[in-house]
Amino acid sequence: MDIVTLTLNPCLDRTLWVGEFGGPARREEWQTGGKGVNVARVLAALGVRSLAVCPLGGAAGDKFLSLARGEGVEVLPVPVKPETRVIDTRVRERDFEQRVDYRAGSELSDAELDELEGRLFSVLPGARALVVAGSASCGRAAGRVPGILRRAREMGVQTALDSNGPALLEGVRGLPDLLKPNEGELVSLVGSPEPDAAEELIKSGVGAVLLSMGARGCCLIREGVQKYCPAPRIEAVNPVGSGDSFLAGFLYAAFKGYSDERSMMIACAAGAANAGAFPAARVSRSDIEMVLGQSI
Image (tube, rainbow, N blue to C red; front, top):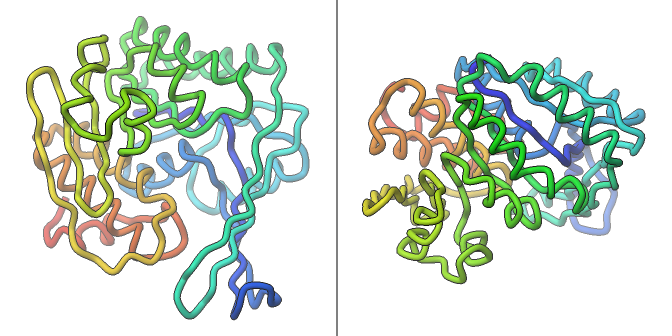
């Protein structure tokens, strides 16, 4: 595999389309969810060989695997006792306003996490990069992230971290080669949303920070260097999955050998393409090229 993603807290995403909130669903759509799975899905659409490693359990876990096959996402499932969570999002048809019934993940045992790590590192040799993405289902799982990142780097695998909550706060200690926070996540790490504040992370040993700034674009921070890229102007209807599509676009371009500037342009175009449509993180090459106005 070119890129392996680790999703510690996967889910089934069910979108319920309604005329008005409180009314019955007129139709529903299902897809696999979790940030690492989203990244893998977009990478696969761009022709990058990717594998999503996920702890999955119960009937929802079985449904997850069935959906993944139809989506073209290659998944390495690690069986766990807790049922895979289901997240319902109600979307009002006339204006795309959303209301999410969020469910947190379940506790995983040390034995289950040991098995997860074992399966992950069994497929990591030969990969170009490991992407750890999304929340952790429990504090025990979040505590594993820095060690996973360090071990992967020792194997010569490039590492990227795009997490939130405890998985981000713990994971940054693993000094990933690439850290992709949004502005709110940067505040949680260094107390400020400004790119200058990310220099603190670089000094600590993080390789680079790719700061996503929504409609304002992004900034890539390396030691002593900041590069900005504006976001394309689009009519946004669905922000969910835009950050995952953004990261997948950047990784695709970086591994093609494109410059930082072009990689950032493609990343911003991928994020914008996602924001302009449903469902989340189902961006194709043609979608990105349409936004960018050129081939990639």
